Image 1 (cartoon, helix red, strand yellow):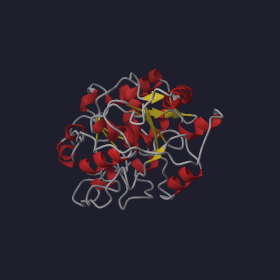
Image 2: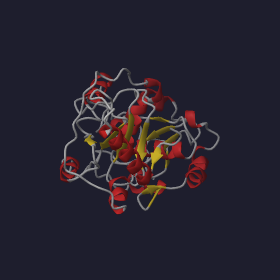
Image 3: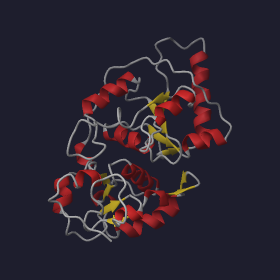
Length: 296
């Protein structure tokens, strides 16, 4: 795949082609589906609403991935509100979904990919899966195009656990963030809304503010009408933020490591590949009161 995004027209065509192959009399019962679609709709305000929306209607054949249950391990402490899942547990979940190394995966959420399609996209890449894309515009764009929606649950042929483990080198640790606090700005970018970054409000975490030296790029600025902005526009906005830093030197964060994945997606679309994510993010940073906090 040459791009981390796919539009609704291309996905509809791929699904139609896949259905035709499955109905072909020459297809065997053991033939692996060429494409898996995963619904990752989620709301921080109402964690149950994503699953409820999925039950009411989803893309044909789509599975459901829950941010709290499937894409996080809420039992881990000190790592923020959405700690990364255990690598083996995530590999087992992929197998249960019928996703193997050759499976093409498209993930979507309600709209712009921030909650939580980009998180699943990143986790799949983290475990070594290359064939994954985010549906640009998500469920809203699919509906706006008049494409079919179903409440029917897909039949899944499970596979063994995915044969991979998370590449920890692509995850920034709290120790690295602490060690780089005095580096020139541009290496750490916070994807939260400006008022949260500045410490004017904090609706989710016990402490307001940001990591000293971080710069702010609210993830919503990368979106227009529910879709990611064009690559050239994103690059023109993001390149000045990182300055002379190579993308591989850049660390992305947010409140709990979820919308940081959306910023990573935007950087990849802009051709600035290689940034890493501080997965604990702000909620993990403030779990230790000895760590410094900046406001303004």
